[in-house]
Image (tube, rainbow, N blue to C red):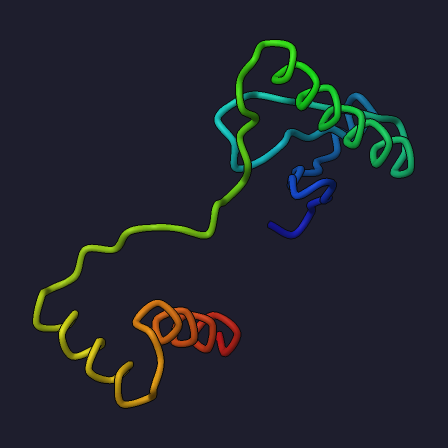
Length: 112
C-alpha cells in the first residue's frame, strides 16, 4: 500500500478526491469500518490519529478488545514430508523451526 499513514500500530489508507477536494481514508487490516477525511495533509494526520483514538475509546466503552492489524502468528498447512525436511534444516542450522521459517520468509520478502 503506497499511500498509507501509521499511528499506534494501525495503518490507514490515504486517497484523494479531486471532485470533493479532500483526502480520505480508513483504518486498514481490521474488520471494523473506521474512516477519516481532511482538507490538507497535516489535517489528515491529525484526523487519522483522532480516528484511531476514538476507535480505541469506543472499544473500551463497549468492553471489547480493539482489533489489531496482525498478531504475528499464522498457521500454514504444508505437506508432512516438507514439514519434516524444513525441521531437519532448522536443526542443522541450530535454530527452532519458528526461527528458521521466519528467517526464510524474511529473506524472501526483503530480497523481492
